Amino acid sequence: AASAHEVVVEAWRRFPLSGKIVTRATSLLANMSNVPDICPALQRCGVGPLAMGILDTPIRSTANSNSNTSKDSCILVVVGGGGGRDAAAAEEEIDEPFVRDFVQYLLTNLEDSNH
Image (cartoon, rainbow, N blue to C red; front, side, top):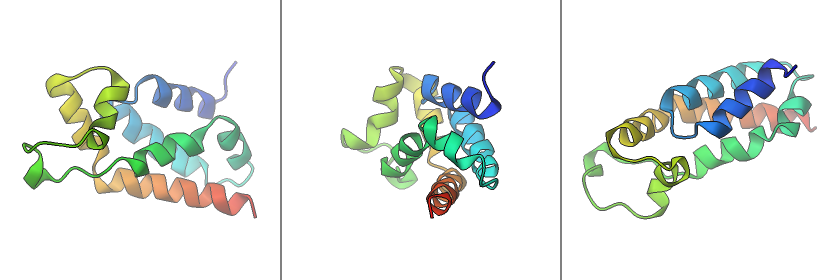
């Protein structure tokens, strides 16, 4: 049977375009990372690269959301394979500042557990 963190990481991997899943997974994993004994398990599951993918994706400006976007700014849409209105809504949710805050907090806890 998979542990809770493994289920969460797998959902994050399988549904990278679902704003709700990414947001909830990120917040849950950030909270789990408060427990130093959990951090190695999170690292083994590949949380680091998933989290870095969020931080490496440029933030879309709401003022420029209708302008031409670069290939890099559309990475979540390409990875998710979808498109259209649902993809744009998911990308907007993932662009929320608190999601990036959770990701940064998660990465900081993972880094601190290595020392």
